[in-house]
Amino acid sequence: MAVDFRFIVIGRGMMGAAAARHLSSMADGIALIGPREPEERKTHDGVFASHYDEARITRTFDANLAWGTFAARALDRYREIEAKSGISFYSEVGCLYVGPQKAEEDFFRDAVAVSRTLGSDIEAIAPAELGRRFPYFAVDPDFTGYFERRRAGHINPRALVRAQVSLAEQGGVSLIEETVTSVRDAGSHVEVTAGGKSYSAGRVLVAAGGFSNFHTLLPRPIDTRVMARTVVFYEMGEREMAIFGDMPSTIVLGDREEDHIYILPPVRYPDGKTYLKLGGDTERLSFQNLKDAGAWFRSDGSAAERDHLSRIAPQLMPELAGCPVTSGPCVANFTPTGYPYVGFAQSPRIGVLTGGNFVAAKSSDELGRLGAVLLAEGRLGDEDFGRELTPVFAAA
Image 1 (cartoon, rainbow, N blue to C red):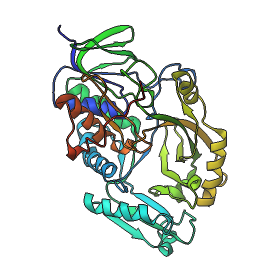
Image 2: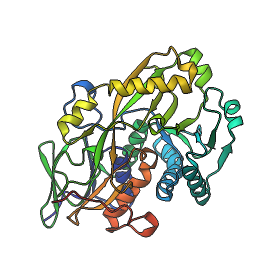
Image 3: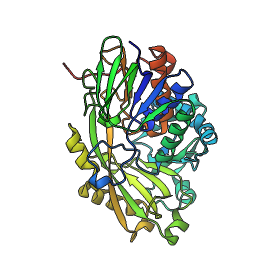
Image 4: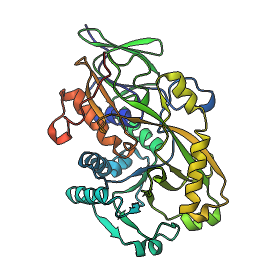
C-alpha cells in the first residue's frame, strides 16, 4: 500500500528534532511528530520534555571516548546550525572541571587522554591557581582543575530545538504538533496514531526520551530508568552579575558523590530574570508511568534536594548567600549500558533513539544524526560506535 511518509520521527525534543533535520538532507517524505512545549506547565496533563530550559552544559572533556566523540561532532556543527537557522543558542564560555586530584585521578587521566584523541585543548590548573583564576569559587586547597576554553560552554536547549525544527521544515519535513499514542508494525509499513489521526510510514524512529515507554510506542519496552532530578535557581542581581557574570560552565567533583554538582553561569530566562542554575545526581525517585512522571513535571522538584543543593552552593560560592532561591523538575533517562540507545526494536521498521544518561544535551545533534543514519541506511558502523549503542529491551 502507499504510505503517507517514508520516515516518521516521533518526539520533537533535542534528539528527535536533530534526527529530522539530518534526515531532511538524506531523503524526502519525512514527518516529525510531537507536541510543542505546554504554555502552562502546572496544569498540563500530557507528555513533557526536559529541554524546557535555557541552559545546558556543553563540553568535550569526558573519560569515555564515545561520549566525547558525540559531543565533539555536535559542537563542530553548532555555528553552522546557528548561521543557517538564524537562531543563536551556543555560548562558548568554556567549561571548568574541578575536584580532588587523588580521588578523581582515574577520571581526569582518562578524560585528558580522550581529549588528546579528539584534538581538544585542555588546560590543567594547579590548586594554587584555581582561586586566582576563578575567584568566585571557594574550593578545597587540594582541588585541581581542568579548563576547556574552546568547544565548551553552554547551549540554550529551547533555542537549539527551534533551530533544528526550523531547518528540518526548510528541508521539507512535515511538522505535526500532536502526541503519538500508538505505533504498530502493520507488516509492510508502520502505523502511527497521533491526535486521533493515523499516519503510515516505511520506518519510524521513536525519540521520546523518558516517555518512550509510557505509550504504546515500541513492540517491547526498553530497559531504562527514568529518574527524578531537581535543579536550583539563584536569582542574580547587579552585585551578583558583577561577580559571576563571566564564569564558565562548571562541574565540581566533590569528596563525596553526593557533593558532585554542575553549575550553569547566569542566564536570562523567559520571566526576564537572570539565574545561576545548579543541580546534582543523587536522587533515587524513578517513574514507571505517565501519571507519575507528569505529576513530577508539574511540581517544583524535591524540597529535600533543593535544601541539599542550597547547602552546598553557598559553601562553594559564598557570594550566593542571600540570593532568592527557587527550584524546578527535570528527569534523567539512564540505560544499563551507560550509552544511548540507537537501534531497531523487534521490528526492523521501528527504531529507537533515547537514553541520554544525564549527559546527552551537548551531544544531541550527533545522536540525532545517528538516528537518521539508522533509518536511512538500516545500520550504524563501528565508526559511529554502533555496537555500543545497541538497545536493551525489557524481558518479554
